[in-house]
Length: 318
Ligand code: SAM
Image (cartoon, rainbow, N blue to C red; front, side):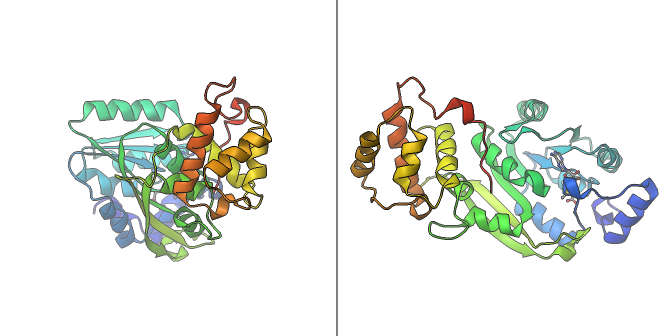
């Protein structure tokens, strides 16, 4: 029997009982036990022999083992030493699997250095690699993992992830909709984001409280607008949406208080065709990119040409 075929509820319960440990809720340890669905996730990545796949959260190694036969290399990350030991045994037959026992994140804004270095080494060793992220993501790191990959210079081509349904809805929300925020803008400004399936809690063990979604992201070939400075834009929209109900004008005056006067802000808004009563939540992505570019150019060359360096370690929250 192949390893992935064993990941059923009874198999997992027995495995955990034998090892004398319990799934950790704080680490998002909800394992996929519907093997058709696991196959669906893997198939949705359109795997090819030259692919290099990053999986975050190896768990028991069930999905890792399902991916490995189809691709050139798999790098799978696992924070929990119990899970890591099990995944090591499960994936031992696959020479193309590299397992790392570490937190995937250094902080909310950065992947851990060892993850990036190992990935870069694997990509450099692989002939014509196509890099993909396939993961049943732990809920606690899902947003930073996706945001950081989009922000990074890593050459990703597809992400297929299982995440909480509510998060998926925030990722696809359009302007004027309730979930529309910095995450939707950040992702949709650079990616096509598509919910492939809604999935019930019963497909996991232990069962989570909420529905989940399988989501596919691809970089956009023709983004709606060109972002001059992605780091600036990421910070800009995070700050705008942290006060989403306030008038755009007053948020911008506060945001650029060190670099621009009120008349400067008014002029930039009028020149850009933004209404006096505009709010971030009602602006579409092209307008937000245009606004960010406009302010970026205006403050270029001022003493602090990036928004308050002191605060820029904040990340985009869902
Ligand atoms: N891939 C398996 C599956 O599909 O059944 C397990 C997925 S489970 C939802 C998420 C896994 O991510 C858990 O094994 C958990 O220990 C691990 N994990 C949680 N936080 C992590 C982090 N910050 N870095 C790396 N792994 C993490």
